[in-house]
Length: 460
Image (cartoon, rainbow, N blue to C red; front, side, top):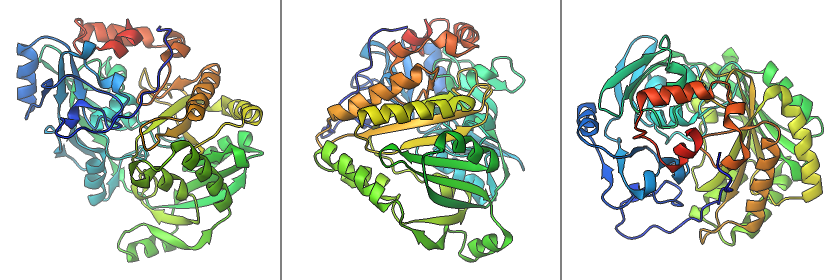
């Protein structure tokens, strides 16, 4: 376990003529040297490349993870651009098989056109690739489902020597492959379960946070899908509770051509709270970055309305903008205690926040390295935005470090695809199957071809 604290990276401006694949999506990390990208057009080409070459390799999909997760080792080796291995491979009445680099948006569009959905709620961003979502533990909300990997029936992977292996749910290594950190092989195909699409009505409310420690679990036990945004400085919460729509709501939704139906009544009770958060954001960013998208993510909490639509229309509506995002998973049974701790810490320190605390709860996951492995879980999300010059405010960095430290002390497990300080965690203590995962890695990639400094520090 490393003892060097994580340094949040500065965002650098894009250079004219550069190969954008050599930097991650947030443009705060270089992934490899010029000329290091290889882009196979088929699985056969990928197999041939791996079987006839040596050296370290890492996969680049949408590149939304922190750069250290994607970088090739010692800034040498090969970056595999798999964007051409995308699209629908096959389907049955209740399954669909996609190439690993298929964007989640395309997965959702294909299923929606068939009147279907995954048995897993989506994350807010659909630009991710399917393989990347599995490898990092992307999740939505709702105690009756878990991460997107929970919808996988089988995963096809090209190993370091160029051979191909299929892992289905009966395979003993499947729980390792479900969330692999890109350290076991290259995911080239995923077969997903599909179910009939449900139309939801999402009721949005602004409530006080005095009883949030108790209310959060109650909301999640009593509703199908719940997401909450907590504004500690104003002691308010905006909570979304989604359940199956009534027959009349479905009729109105269908009559509108299947577009998201916004109900007539608008709620403006959080507008003052939103303005308070925007002031902090404007002051700390010293100018609006990314064409004002950070401001848009906050202003959406103004004048909110109830809506009716499918799960993707309601929940998959994130505005993708570079940021430092820390997300820590806490057992749901202990989430109330952690909320109380954050309230006390917030009263004492009055941190400057760019965005409310995001609260999403899921059911247990089978994946050995899933932060929600074997338990109902609440994910606490914290966001700080870049300034227009690519810097981060000192107040914002201090806020993220302090809140992560507080949740790590409570046994929190960080989301793998976001930023975290690995020096705060004892991985073997947090994950009962940690050693089992390491054994699978040694069996599938004994030379650690898919390793880099980040994964080596974690797993060796």
